[in-house]
Amino acid sequence: MLVVPGLQLAEESLLGWFASYAHAGGHLVLGPRTGHADQLARVWHEPAPARLTGVTGVTCEEYANLTADVTLRAVPGSPLALSADAVATRWVDGLAVDDAEVLADYDHPHFGRWPAVTTRRHGAGRVTCVGTVPGRELACALAPGSGRPRAAAGPTCRCPSPSRAAPRRTVAACTWSTIGSGSRPSCPHRRT
Image (cartoon, rainbow, N blue to C red; front, side, top):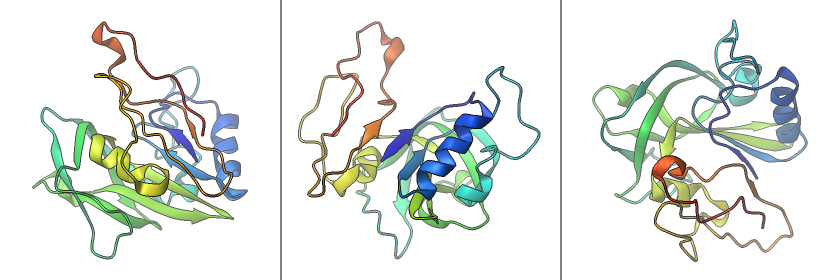
């Protein structure tokens, strides 16, 4: 699994590599704002996520900051198990579904028109789009094995420590932690 939580600026070649990764059998998890501009911060002249809309099956219609957490709910039939404590935090990408399966949506009068989490097969792999900064419960539900973290790494960063029966590698490119809080992040990038 490769987690790309908010790579707003990305070279075209990197976006192509992400698509190739999923096509070859990887599970690519894209977070909000991924692929909105090139490496020089020039907005792509196409819907976001640029160069990945055919791979993800979604486009970003609009976006908003959140001033309070928004409750999430799994859609009927979703394999994503969410507790009542699952929330979206800080940000919403309004994802329009073209050819993807909706796993969760927002319990909100405005944001409820868009999905919070989608997934789509791509080649031998899968691409999952997360249209928000996930709260702890959503992050745990998205983690490999869908289990709760075995250990919390500290007050500003909680890292799931997934285990797998199969010898596959999971790479987290970011921890969605509060890096600017004045405290040192307590968990580095993890590989399992």
